[in-house]
Length: 180
Length: 113
Image 1 (cartoon, chains in turn red, green):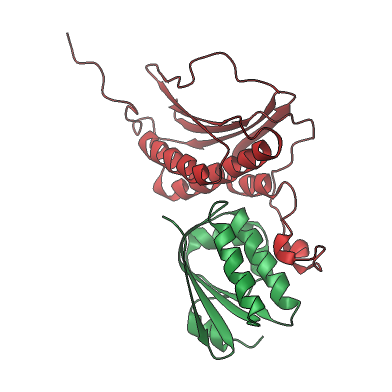
Image 2 (cartoon, one colour):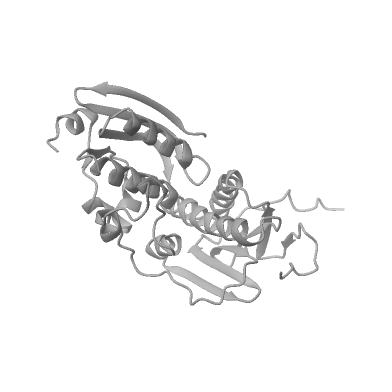
């Protein structure tokens, strides 16, 4: 199983223009909400407009849910990584999993669940029948204009970006050091 | 915020009032509620989503599953929702063509199936 790169598990960077927050959590459904809350809080800090914050919340939630599901199926002890970057007029959320992904990434365009919903149940209990694979990425693709999904033997990354005002970003951690 | 669920009967329909967030963590509770109602032979359901603050594709999956389950008994599942941020995911996924979506519980209860 691929391992995370050797680096500080709670790396925090803040250059003059860019601030990064990394959230690493055990692949449990209850932590997806935490990822959403942190993402929205930082997006607001970054100056993402209020109307777009709902998109951030839903898209990061979908990506985190996808990663948690993949980890629980393949490597439940490995944490999921959410990396949030604010700088250069963009707010970027990357959700990274460690599950080898050799299938072509799906997503983009607008999904249509009409046929799935109208189809006769295939299982004994229709409530046990999941939505079609890839619906999470399809929803993200329908929400976010700037999204890329990359995959490989080391895992997959869903990268989403939104415009943010240059002046909207406040220091995420603490304040600048006081003058000596 | 966690998920809140309350049910009441109105005529031949059962109204499920849902509040809070429907996601991968809380959706199983809504699923269990629908299963229980169907087991009690309540096949005409109205899901009132006016107090729902968040809904993702996991929640959609539970609603689609519920729709299929009640339809297997010639039942129905109507939604009540006027919140744009919730309606958006129904539009993205094309499910506005599948679920009857109403502006009020009264309208949903009065709807002909």
